[in-house]
Figure 1 (cartoon, helix red, strand yellow):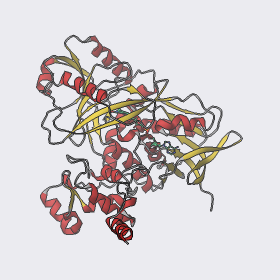
Figure 2 (cartoon, helix red, strand yellow):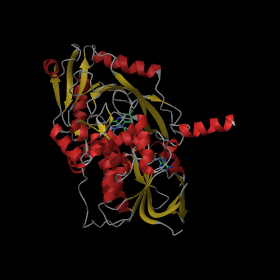
Figure 3 (cartoon, rainbow, N blue to C red):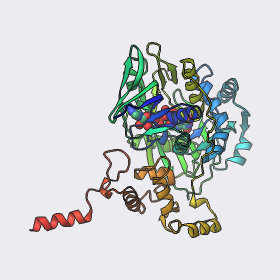
Figure 4 (cartoon, helix red, strand yellow):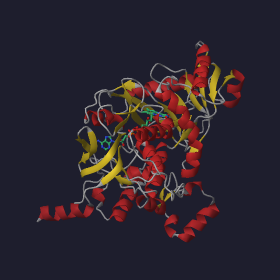
Length: 492
Ligand SMILES: Cc1cc2nc3c(=O)[nH]c(=O)nc-3n(C[C@H](O)[C@H](O)[C@H](O)COP(=O)(O)OP(=O)(O)OC[C@H]3O[C@@H](n4cnc5c(N)ncnc54)[C@H](O)[C@@H]3O)c2cc1C
């Protein structure tokens, strides 16, 4: 087989890798994105609070502190060009009776040093008017109007899809197992699908970035996963929360947040507990109790009756507690983009800028493409359309008339489009990320089997081959006809 050569190989298809790929796709370069799972954005990028932070929290002397604000400043243009759901609802850090209210001023000063715009401290009367469900004990809050909520996986997918439109190659289910080097210069990667060759390698492997770094002899990256657990509520839960609400931050965490997601689901969490396993995404009774107790502390009328899901995410925190974005000192062509814990989502565009600056310093030629495609076509979101718009679509293709996910009003045609899109969905969760089928009240109880059937039909595979997400997550054990055949054989 012919050798495959690239200018840049990016390891990891989370929001960091996708942002780097998207920005590199503006240049005349051959770029390859390698992802070990069957879809992009299945690591930390899929399970987080989904906030584009204002940027007042991180210390200005850290890389995190510098990049958060720069990322936030780019977000509005990106979501407009790439059609990503985003709501700039603003955030509040609330101080209660008995809290040290001077901490709000410290945060405000920190934010000013980081260059956060329009920060102000609001008083009790403002809070009572704008957040009617907040406890009467809320005395004041730091208001950051430039914070917002985004759909994190669509953010990553949209950047990657636009990069594909502009020539990016993506290899899914391709796990990097080693880095190839010659005379202290990287020349490629070994994977479970063979070797790929390139002059520059960017390590954006999230929780596994330390293992990739070790492949070139770098020991300084040490990822210590920290779990965050959440409750997610039904969209129908009528409980007003108009901003992203924080309490005063703790040492390594911004504390339990109460917010609405971009799709209007109330969400509370996350905890912040170190864990040993990089795949330990189990929720725990203790963690969830902490979440609820802390959220009740500021929203006393909150109940658990409308919760539809519990989930957990893992922060890929480096022991330094900062992002490590730098070229390797001993090995040419290797760039680490590691320790990307919160605010990694908010910082992603700025992380990509920094990586590209480093690549340029390392000798990569950056010539802008002349035929660059700036915009990503907006996917049809049937549930957002008026009756007239829906009728028109059904007339154009009757598959829009068949509702598969009743909770979220997702049509057959949207699912087919997700499967055949620029980065086609291959799993049930990949369909969910692209269409919201299965994201509603019944959590796929009704539409799940239908989605399995459609994936199987469109990909020409047996339903027993269709997975929820990872390679050990096949949903069906056998087809009925196989069972019947077996019974016939057994009876004979
Ligand atoms: C609980 C929690 C709350 C958070 N809240 C926020 C928030 O509100 N706002 C915010 O800005 N940030 C937040 N963050 C942080 C944010 O989610 C992360 O910084 C961001 O998603 C990291 O993206 P990433 O691309 O670096 O890593 P990931 O999304 O983990 O992507 C890394 C990818 O690399 C792949 N990979 C790993 N090893 C290999 C290999 N050997 N070969 C090929 N591929 C490989 C993985 O499969 C994965 O897809 C939160 C994080 C957590 C856990």
